[in-house]
Image 1 (cartoon, helix red, strand yellow):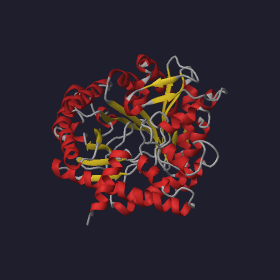
Image 2 (cartoon, one colour):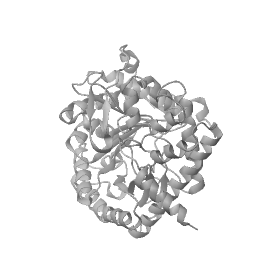
Image 3 (spheres, one colour):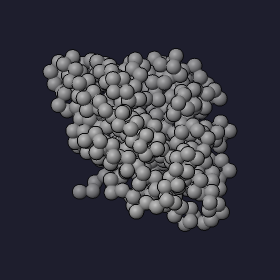
Image 4 (spheres, helix red, strand yellow):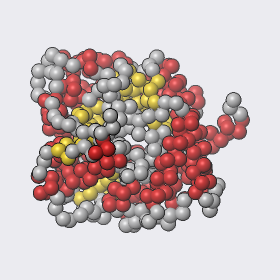
Length: 452
């Protein structure tokens, strides 16, 4: 039973510690839209999305008003479009991007994810066409997000795809140069992608999912930091227990919102993703949590250990609060979206190499990182390959969302605005990876992939 103390505690978390529901994401299957002419398939895609998600935004706003819980984003994820486009009569995938963008605008959501392909083991016709269209699709739409799964522990790494994706990132940056290379902020490359991720830009609705589902992503770095302030100087067992208890409370609130949205929309409840998702707001930072543990600056020695503790404790607390934890669930470390990460990168405490090490123990990977605009496509591909290798070997989801900011150099700042924040341009290694990327082919799955 909820008592008065718990109610007041939750109100304080919302008002003073940046607690919110980061997103309600409706996943919609488009498998029944595939086939026939591209024009007709796009019509069916638009019609199905706008029918199913007609009341999504209004419902989210009503729940906010009734419970006083901020719900920052209302979003949609759909079946990977490469599957739908590949069954149609044209090689042109751009009409699907336009249809998704129109559907997102009609329903009022801020992003729609699923302009995606899964190519960890090879390419089908729709995959090649979609990857080739990504730069123009992201540069010419406002709300469409794209992702490509290029590696899994079971399949290894598709290095032909990695080469293509480095080139796609580079071209996307150039086509959206007038907007701070914003197109790249809507594109993610994955190892071991999950089918129920509610967070953008990597959300898509997996083929193993039902026709429609509600997934919720919670947040709360500020709440965790405030809790740790109360045990300053205590040992790590106490730190872990404090984070677990806090994650439990955050997740319970997320499940309440998810179940209420599910009931009102008459759509099955899927999962709560309990990832700590930061914002550029001061106090709403994963980096500040790590510094509260005793690090002078995020990125210094000890950062990876602190992040490992945080990620593990968040998961332990979350799974006690809900039987339906899914998505990515852990701690995100996007540079541009985290005030503490931005500060650490600007002062030199946080480097690209250190971020890569941190991704071994946290959710996702190299996220919202700006690099110089003249970074070669092969270098971007090599950065992607390194991060995918971490995911494949460690049997975890990793990803890369990197922005080679057009006309920017190390020390400059790229402004994205809103939740995407601003990113200091970070240096990359000057030595070439071109011959490595040019080999192509497939990096085989690791030996521990053989589990049957």
